[in-house]
Image (cartoon, rainbow, N blue to C red; front, side):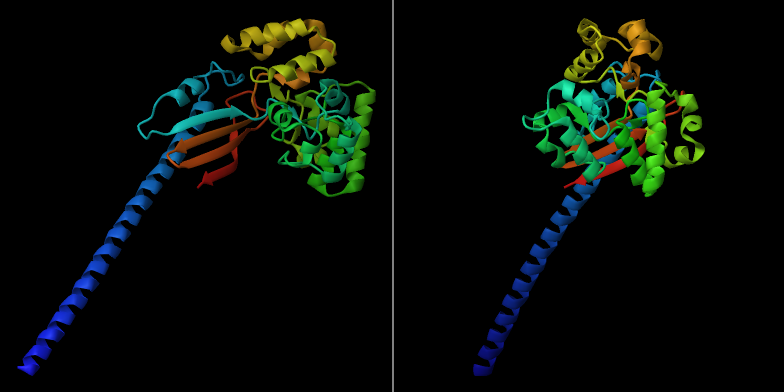
Length: 329
């Protein structure tokens, strides 16, 4: 009897042990299945992120007016259209603000946005010491408020040979080539062009700066208008017109009609006035193409950000290149 009781106890303990083991295995399996479902759901959201980013990029490439980017392009309607995945898409022009890596001292002073106690000359020295910035913060917060830095300036900008600060162009050459002597030779050539008051056109850029410099600097350096008139912040547009002594009323008339109008390159002269268009650098600042776009897609807790650049120097459909990709979380 005692042996039988002992055997029963062992069996009971074994059953309890197996039950606990089975329960633990069931819980582990349930947790694993949940984790697998979450992983599958996340993978699907990320596939949706990529799908929507690619769709937006394709809409940009299929623009029926490729020589002009405006709020009337089909891409804007396309990104607002609801999609089955529930994702949302935002598109932002990154380049139609003043490039703080190249803007000239006198223009920065005339805008009146430098912090009290700081001068454009100090800013110039900071750029010379710190080099070209891919991120404007925190470095430039010493000179501008965060609000002005975000709304008026950008790091996503090409360098235009006709309006870029000459020392900034020298720095660009040194950063790309690593040869200070050659960078200074390039600087002297830029100074000569400025003394002669010669505007370099896109078609003659290679000839004016030499084939070696062209291979080194293009497309970062070109002769295309740096900002898209359709998206330039109003305060920047007004500031440019004031700085170059063009009646600000012209800027106001442009601002009034641009939400419902797509301007072409041939219409810019009429917008600015023939004299202002020919005798001021406005046409080097203000064009109708966007050079850098940000595509932001959000699906649930996940988001994907692409920065794409349009390559200058083509009159046909846009050529876009992916520069940055950020996926979170």
